Amino acid sequence: METSIAGRSGAGAGRREYLGLAVLALPTVLIALDMSVLYLAVPHLTEDLGASALQQLWITDIYGFVVSGFLIMMGSLGDRIGRKRLLLVGAALFAVMSLVAALSTSPEMLIAARAGLGVAGATLMPSTMTLLRSMFTDPAQYMKAIGVWMACFMGGIAFGPVIGGVLLQYFWWGSVFLLGVPVMAVLLLFGPRLLPEYRNPDAGPLDVVSALLSLATVLPIIYGLKELVQHGAGPVQLAALAVGIAFGALFVRRQRALAVPMLELGLFGNRTFRSAITMTVFGGIMAGTNFFVYQYLQTVQQLEPLHAALWLVPSSITIIVGVNLAPRLGQRIRPAYAIAGGLVLVAIGYLVLTGVGDGRTGLAVLVTGLVITGVGIGPMSALGAGLALGSVPMDKAGSAASTNQVAGDFGIAMGVALIGVAGTTVYQDQIADRLPADLPAAAANSARESVAGALSVSPQLGEPLRGQLIETAQAAFTTALHYAAVGSAIIAVLLGILAIATLRHVPPTGAAPAADTPPEEAPATPVAATSGVE
Image 1 (cartoon, rainbow, N blue to C red):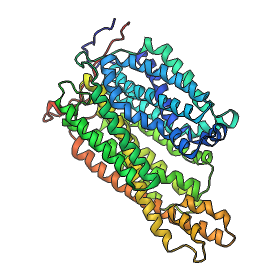
Image 2 (tube, rainbow, N blue to C red; image 1 turned 45 degrees about the vertical axis):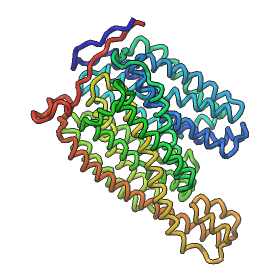
Image 3 (cartoon, rainbow, N blue to C red; image 1 turned 120 degrees about the vertical axis):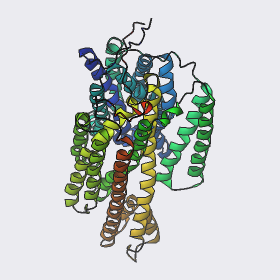
Image 4 (cartoon, one colour; image 1 turned 30 degrees about the vertical axis):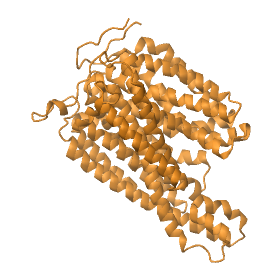
């Protein structure tokens, strides 16, 4: 039988809550890691399973598609059946699907397992964030917990390729999936005792029509944006985006008509929540430059994927440090100014990237710029996520958490699409008039499409034509990286201005709201939940 929600506020967390935070950190790391660990394994599993090029794309992409599509539904479901219960069900499913993926004997089996992992991942993400809200009732401790959660998520993404490379060095490709089994076993063992339960008693039954509409909105849009980057603007890509937008309009219309909607659109009437979500979206767009950074390491510096991942470790460490220091900064100054100051560093870091060249010194410049950016991104990542959940009532936290996560997914997809298309255009403009005159037509066409195309045809050419083609393509791509970095720097500056304009009413963490702050704009005080025996 589930116990009721305690009405106290501001109580400090103890040993049990921090042990619970450690338990919640495990699936957070794993979910993020699962987004990046697979890329190194694709050549190995392709050889073993005989996957076609199309099947390879679905193996890598289906997980992200399904996570994005099910987030809103799972956030709402957690409010109805209990957030801890949903988390534990998702953990069990993730463990089973990890085992199925590791033991897959065909591409179709692996694609299905990855889809199942996506469903499980969508249950875990909003549940972990909302449970933190229940466990850490003191605002300052809550912000610190969010910082730890965000650091774990960032660390999983950053170190996924490195961990994958080590595993593949000594084990078979299925080992990258088996990581999920012991991690979820720990969560299933300790979660029932350490984590509180919460469900919204006024949530009502799950609206199946809204759930289907949310899927029909998110999946086509994410798919269309990804395809836009890989294949350019075509009928399929534009049709997918149009279908997603159309269903999105129907979804919004239905939510407005329902007495108990799946997605609380009223949350966007809260200035703090609205601003935090906006920054999440545009922060993801800004991160689209990372798409060019990783390509630069592999195509211009010609590093193996594992070596490229190792060059990104310093910036990953600074991101983890930054998101953990941000809550302490937020206790001393208003979050608006902490976020804006961090975004100034982000802009400076991206501008440093405009000095990256195509020689070996370019690696030092690249790492320097990314380290500066990593430090600066911390306040927006940690404080923004905390504000998004902390500004809404407890019974809306599930909807807020899923909205924040979907916003991040949309932002990243849009960033890769928009900055990817813009950067590709710059590359094509740069290389158009620089190709050697005696280059064969087929090779020239491949080189004009992408730097990867230029490198793929270069072995077919003799010297000095081969060297000229590679040098030209690498120089053009480096210029495209410069333009992408400038675009991200501009976004960072605009986000800093937005933070000051829309969040300056939010006091430092733990301080009382300003006297002129409307009640609906004041950050909500987290409400404690007791752990129930069910």
